[in-house]
Image (cartoon, rainbow, N blue to C red):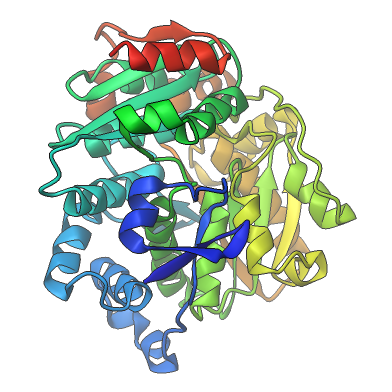
Length: 432
């Protein structure tokens, strides 16, 4: 499997290099040189396949023999070992629950697959692999659980001070072992900028074998495509014009859907649902991509002002916004609308949605109102207990916290406080 940089299609790497390096030398993101299309018969029989069988077939096609089939099956079986059910609220609106993994967030799919793949590629290497990851909430927890105790790998998580929920922070800062946390006096964009600069720093790269667990890494993106196929399989009983509404921040999740579509998945439309950090919805309206500083909201995992994966989206459509608009529509949702939608979902269906899911449901509802033949799923990207303060206050209840999250509440937080200047972060790393 060969991949190229989104900044220069002549700059190429094989899968191992792309996974272990994360970012191309020219700061571009890696994309597959060739995206295979799965045969029509495969889709005709998709109801007969298990989730793991779907994941294996998708990977097998993409990797094109790069990893032996038995090894690939082992990676899939260790990583994709929890479900992705579509819970239908009515006959047109479904919630794709992506929080059944260990950290209760959709990023468990990518983090566990990435950990298994990196461990496979780093086998026999005397030098430890150092993972740097920026998080706006759920990525850090998923990465922490996915890589916890994995031999030969150290993980360093950067998160914005005061901008993640208490239980999210506990997931980042209490596990210990090979997981370290850095509390940054800034925004997620600042965290992401520190990570990106570290990858390009010669001195750090001489001391460490650096890689990333953010969605800039192609091994995070590929497994996120699996559940689009799995959700499509489940929605077929409700209609053939299927749409997916994706609450979006850094846009890795939606880009994975576009990858699935390029592999032949017959999705009618992708709905990009954001909070007021509406850079991509604005782009779809105006054709102008204009990053700006992120704004804090109650759907904090989507508080991203310069989505990294826009480079991949732009690459898939060769910079043609009109072509992108044929596959995608964008909506943005305010905090007030988000809270109202959480109440509507609970009152109408008895279903508790987290703020990000409510953003998705709001946008899906608007789209389906204008497209009477369509059915769709909005993505419930995290268990509502991960945002218990917002959920409890908005719905006037106490959401039940699953045991695997509740046990972290009383653990002591351990995090190193740093500023947003790269020199300070570099000095901290070099001192280790």
